[in-house]
Length: 108
Image 1: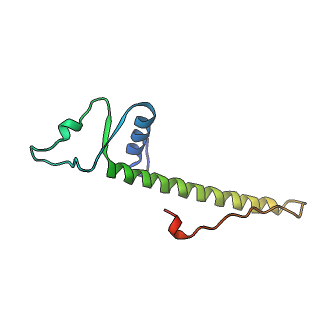
Image 2 (image 1 turned 180 degrees about the horizontal axis):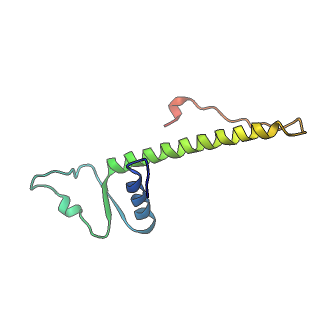
């Protein structure tokens, strides 16, 4: 699978683990280190896909932003198509849909 986004493979793997297998998310207190006091041996598991919570949160927010952008592009494409179709219609009245407006502080 060829993609532009370098994180796409890992996101696909995370999705696959969530849907079919086992995803293990570790608290950020168990940081990776190169010292002998590293606790990563406790965290390793051959049955699971492991990642830290901050990495999971970062990838989740990135995916939410991508989904939001996709929905915006879809609504703009539908709007453009409806404008194009309205030019050929005989009916003069089309019922508009009013959408609520939200302040930026409520958005992610």
